[in-house]
Image 1 (tube, chains in turn orange, blue):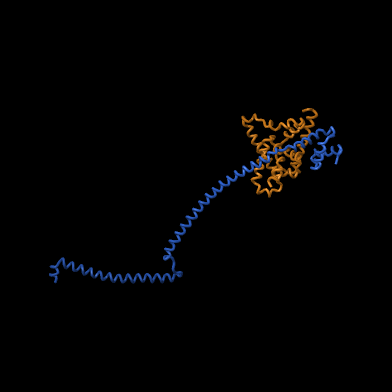
Image 2 (cartoon, rainbow over the protein chains, first blue to last red):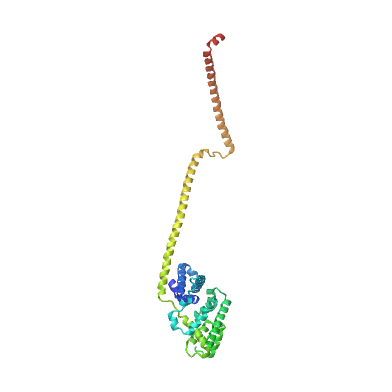
Amino acid sequence: MFESRVLPVKNKLFRFAFRLLGSSEEAKDVVQEVFIRVWNGRDQMASIDNMEAWCMRITRNLSLDKIRARQRKATDPIDASFDIQNDSRTPYEATENSENMQRINDLIASLPEKQRQVMHLRDIEGYSYNEICEILELDMNQVKVNLFRARNAVREKFVKINAYGL
Amino acid sequence: MPMDSKEIGQLLEKYWNCETSLEEEQVLRSYFNGSNVPDQMKDAAELFRFFESERKRTLSAAFDHDIMHSVKKTESKTKVISMVRWVQVARIAAGVLVMVAAGYFVRNEIMKSDEQSQALTDTFSDPKDALEETKKALMLISKSFGKAKEGAGKINMFNEAEQKIKEKDKNPDQDKTSI
């Protein structure tokens, strides 16, 4: 049950955590934590309708916790110099991805948190609006508004960059 | 189903307005991942290609092994925790057991002493009968006292007689004279 229902979604969980955290190591930690929680609560697993959405929601909550912990740490003078952006790019991405891919990545990373989450779930993972509502605990209107803003912000900024090299 | 650039353009407008279905978004994705994308749609194509490449980001194959390992490790940890908890429960249970046993013995003792004092407990249900019986008992005691008083009277006679004799012994002359 665990291996057939939960493990197959690991990459979706990882990508979502990575989108929020920008660090593959931290994202991996989050996915691991999600699985430990699922494993410990596997007796109640049968009562959960949409296992995948549930896992995604936990992934989001744990990632946001990590971001908050990081912000607390950032106020610490010793850790202030630590730049999280450094490890967000793996050697593979640095060489294989084109400059534009990196630009789009940075654009999405600069979006407000909710917009970034909605865009990731819809445009990368292909979730339905209902599923996104469930994962993010938002209503349909909020999901659509955030998606609209995200898509148009990325479009405008990307066009500007390409047209004027800004 | 191949689409011309005009239809794709319309679909793209719908996409920016968040009016496309998942299926339509899939059409756009596969269109932009192909070649022959018109120049005016190059920006959109880049975006869709980015989405597609992001979808391919996966965890390493070693992750499954690692996860099962760490999951089982936490399970053994929780087992230890449950053992500790069990010991605590056992401790409380032992305390309760001692209390119950003590209570049982104390109760037994009380029962025993009750049996001993059973004679003092009620033997009559009707107060009148009880009164009659009490009266009888008191009469019996009273009679015995009466008898005892008679006996005591006799003893008194002896005492008086003894006193008189003693007095005679002390003053024989007096007696003589008096006689």
